[in-house]
Length: 364
Image 1 (tube, rainbow, N blue to C red):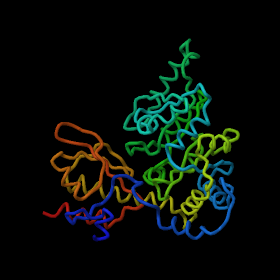
Image 2: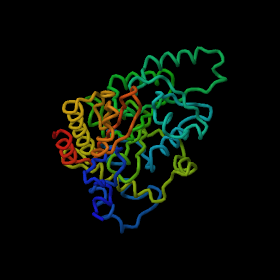
Image 3: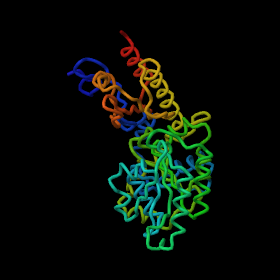
Image 4: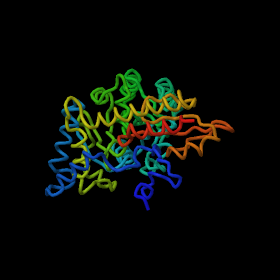
């Protein structure tokens, strides 16, 4: 069998498929793999006490302009959310989030399994509105029976959101101020942070470090084989974090495997880093994809996303035709004859892939 066919790059019909199902349907960036191989034979300490992990922490502190930051490397997003939320909250506290949030929709109750209620508020294109948050908190603290309820201890948001939208710097600042007012933690899930930063005009790692109490820098969806870097930017992580993380089964004996990858991702290359380059390239190709679907194929966006996640309304009669060209995710029905679908670019998407499908789909 032809190697490309065997590897699912070309279906039986002979067409090349551009796989845009997700940004974690691939291996790792070549530079990350090369660094893993180059460092493979060196013996180091375990559990994050290796020189690669420490250097990666130094690079992340520099990128965040947060010299006091404490940084922990975990394996994946759901594990990170459940572990860090449980570590940061008191046993009687819950976490507020938009109703489309990953912890509320796509993590199989992992946070609630640790004993913390997820309290969902209405989302606005994937975002939490500060006025909704303020109204809910005012009502909660005005209730004379509040001590009998789950106490809010944290606000959880994602950057970018599950719908590929972005908070502005002003919106993040407003959420931060509400958290300060009510003594809540602001936790930012950055599984796709590279793509959010690349698409944003005013949010940066240093800004995030100033406004968030905890955030994580996603590696799994942004060029690494696996791994997330959890950042406590002011160095105020709960005590005995190693023990807390181990209690959750989340402590990697070979933590260097993640540390080495983040060292490669954040090693300066000129004025930037591989992590930022990965984000910029994926967003640029997402905009190329938008041109194909909106301008050339006449599809309507389901939501206006500036990031690597693109959502389009597809006539149902065209779904099978598109499947011969793209791997994508059916998101939700729009009406009886149209479906919203998600197409996700990543560090692994190439200009040639998009150009090839552009040519095939627009050639009569």
